[in-house]
Image (tube, rainbow, N blue to C red; front, side, top):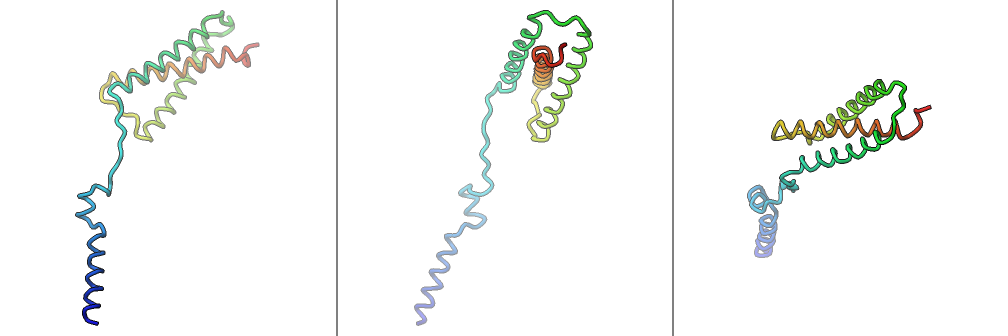
Length: 135
């Protein structure tokens, strides 16, 4: 009977040794392991160039035809303000998600300028080509 009790205690200690504690789990790297995707070296520049390409196509379609002669400078000012407001909302959301950080001032200005130009061209394209606002 005494041997059975010692055998049971030995089995319990063997099970406890199998459970991960602080040192064995840290050695195996199971705890607090974060999988981080590696971005390409020029990811910001590629996104900025894509925004510039799309905005140039949209601006081509806006200026391809003749614009209505009635108050078009005022229309462009209002469309620019709306585009800037939408881009600032996007910048704020990126900042909250901790995705709005750059390693150089050039990347910051290039990305921000291309996003602002994209939203201004998008608002102008929607305004002039939708036909809802033009009489």
